[in-house]
Image (cartoon, rainbow, N blue to C red; front, side, top):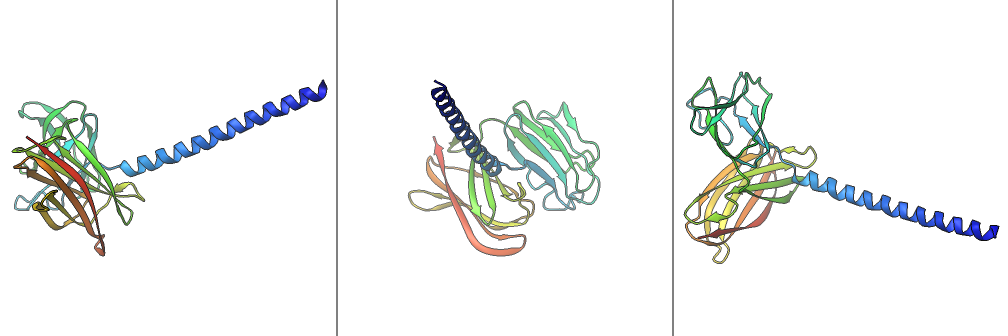
Length: 253
């Protein structure tokens, strides 16, 4: 009887130990997959105040002036200039101040989370030519791709279902996998072509992105299937073997 109880106890112990091992390895696998997923999809939602923005004769004052974002997400305004700047966010009718930054020192940020949908204006209190628009909506689609060279791509557009005859806004973000930060100084191109005829309908020739965030817009004249292509040819002022990724775009009536 004693021998039987001992054997039974060992078998139970073995079963429990095996179950614990399986749970442990399952947890490790899920943790690894979840960590990779988070690492891949992460992108910083940043609007950069470009150097020299206080000069009204400059070509641009922010790196992007029409910024689509999902409800509940946060935007950072980063001051890449060498002087103080401030930002205020106001309602689209210009009557209500939603938030104000105070002074943003060089190389510092101002953050604000947009909890309600709609369109908002942002502008400088000191320099009236510095202004743009935030579009807060869940009607936005995001594609995530790997470009190699430790660079990921997030490209979003709104509306998510593109309609012919209406302007679509694109937001392109390049991400450094090692730091999970937006990758500065990328030489890139963005092309849209008809998937049946290969006719190019939109082309942004090789362009330098200083802060890894770039806008584009296009009005699809016809409904149909299109292919978007983003390529990179340089990182941090160093040429690389060109890398390209493609993704599908649908335009409806």
